[in-house]
View (cartoon, rainbow, N blue to C red):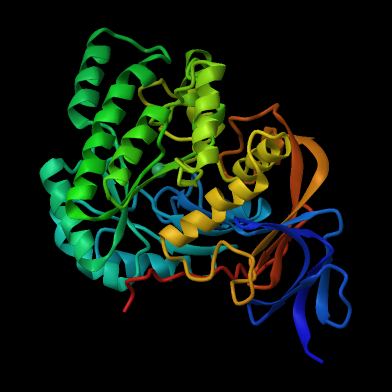
Length: 452
Ligand SMILES: [Zn+2]
């Protein structure tokens, strides 16, 4: 009789296709068997009792910044990937603006540096800089997951204007590559910044005035149009409003291989919070929701699939940093890996969305879009990456629950239902009951689909 490496027994497996009571058996890092819960006859060296629990595919977060190498005081791979593993995220795609991968040599250096530093599997994205467009094909062949592109000068990364965007998208289409585009119009944001600085403004409202809805919508409309003209697989990063999602959908309907990502901050945080919380709500695009009606429209977009997938855009800065700097000087960004799975499970258990939709948006869809082979599903032959969720626990997100070096969460004080109680990566338990178990940090680099 076959003895499997691990069994997760008695739970309700939830995938993008629905749910069923199934026992999951892993061997050699893969899901080797699925059996009706309680069916006798199969044996495993290690057993996780998932009775009364949900068994989800390990989550796939395709937009995180762990700043390693780059700015390890803000985050590093051991802490950031540890936060991921504790919350059921088993695959990430990482890129760091302070140490951008712009050449094949930089990619090799980063891959070597990260050996043994990650609790979860990871792909790496490259930055496409104006003076490095010739690196697109070699970087794709060297195994990056996607290219990050900015339409505005932000985080020290130079913008690509419409001319260079079209060149980049043509280059991507030629290699069947894919990219993630941060969309804010450079001229609109630069003019707003100059006006706000000249007026001597230092209040929190400068963030949504500087990084305006108009700036985002203009850039998204242009990017989605160019994606159609080039036939390039383009993802619009962190879509913040239903109008932005409409602009993406318009071009998708006309045949553009374009899709939109959003993040919990655009479903759950309100624009007005920046007035009191200043740097602690400085991220871009900023939170846009002004009313319950707008929140309902974003959730409807999430539930109907207008939001193709979800990510954190995890970009932490410490509480001390945020508290010590002005609204102009503080880093952009929020921590997200500690809170995203809890918030989305809570939303599902409260009926705002469904677990099937959460699994689709935060595992299956990003794995498919970025061709992360074997990830994002619970099925025979797929990676044995699982998140086991106890739906009967209610707990409160607070700074003490944060594993990221950020040390704080924008959602402190929120009560959530459901908790990840075990995380399995490649058939091995990597976290259980809030503890990291994998002392070796055996997360592996996932070479991208263009790797030769
Ligand atoms: Zn980002």
